[in-house]
Length: 344
Ligand SMILES: NC(=O)N[C@@H](CC(=O)O)C(=O)O
Ligand SMILES: [Zn+2]
Ligand SMILES: [Zn+2]
Image (cartoon, rainbow, N blue to C red; front, side):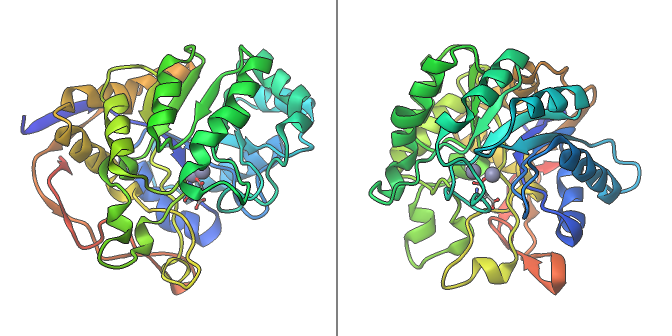
């Protein structure tokens, strides 16, 4: 196959930031995706529907002229988000989900949830409304090894949560382990997962062999090969529970290339080409459209996009950097390297 046409994909997990940074990155996603679920971990976070509506306006204003890209907004769950906020979110028509960041788990998660028991009424309201709870699925206890934090989250947080709220729709975001892939595959249809391109393409050697490579440092951290294989199997299985979520997370070059570098990989500019590369490696290009363009809308109760994109086997060089905010640069994943697929 030298060409593949897909219903236009969507990105079900994306960081656009705000201000100058937003303007620098939004065009990359808008050039290939129909819609994206926009993460609320700004500083300060988007915790209310009113803030989400204002952020939605800023995103639309930052789009290239003529773009039809549609941002789907989320609220950042805190210990004190009231159940009434869920009603406002549903009524807004633009907020499509609520995001759980365990406090301290990742970038801008300091205002996140310290204990889900504080949020029981709000989560009951979400279940009642049929609005998905998206989760950064890692525990934060210092005694838990960073490579085990996702698997322990399943036992300590996710399983008890689903027992308390059996009808809650959940998206286990950016899964990185065999345990998470297997958990989602056997769970009811109300439980789904997003998978990033970088977790499908690389194991932790890419980050740590031959020098420490900060642009491969993201959370949850890259795992060993066995887990990458389990993710590839899940993504290409044809199951409707797994869908595309890049977790493209821009940080300034100086914040990544630092003695304490930020977590996040920037993939938005070549997202679908990176996924095509991973699916081809698994001999499963035919499963790409379901994963990229159909499973996500079905889970969120939205129609698939009406137009399509065509990928062709034509190599492209990934730029060494892109301009970012404050005169800084963003270094994309695989900067300066060649990809075998391009959008026609
Ligand atoms: N994935 C990351 O490593 N970073 C994300 C936050 C997140 O999705 O956990 C970010 O906002 O930079
Ligand atoms: Zn996360
Ligand atoms: Zn993310």
